Image 1 (cartoon, helix red, strand yellow):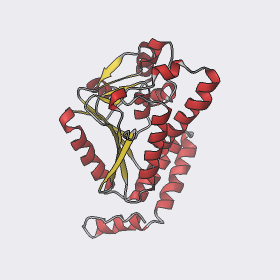
Image 2 (cartoon, rainbow, N blue to C red):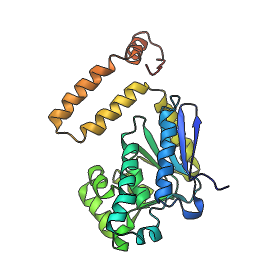
Image 3 (cartoon, rainbow, N blue to C red):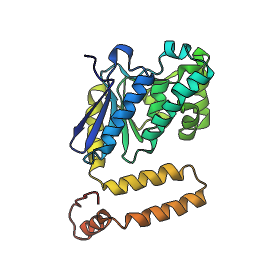
Length: 261
């Protein structure tokens, strides 16, 4: 029996999603995209999971991007209907997921793998890993959201350089331009990622959910509308028990116990 394309497990309040196609360097094709969505369904619906970590199954590859033979077989409408629409839907679901999503980039993150990373909230990268958008070398350009997300996340000149040349970045270079948060030794990647994830999971689930929602939606609004959205969202948060537990714990000089209600 073949192994699932994506594995899930839970470590206390942290859900871990692992890309599990080492023979193809976790190639991003339709079965893989649908497996990612199903894994996300599992972790989103698990009320015990407060933070999600995504990584690859070995020390070589996070995700190597699209299946070139599959892409070469497609033409305009078939690519749009059968693949791109699904890919964009699933990537957007990770981007707007109410639970924080952390990438542990353990190896090559190329093309669609780099584009997927752009949908995640926090990114740690192994020092020996590489990231890039090499589609231009195939006569293509990033079509999994990368041509739009990248220029919204780093300076425009850096985004154009990466996409126009197709060159790869080291982890240190990715940190320098603000594409990832940390470069860490390969042996420490999951240790540091899980430590960070557990630390975030101790925060109020409702505060995390509404903060992320406010930021994702606010980024797409003019500042005046975004500020109104923030005001409404923080006011809604004061309806939760967690908000008052946090304030009470501060006044009583104790650690808060957030219950997600």
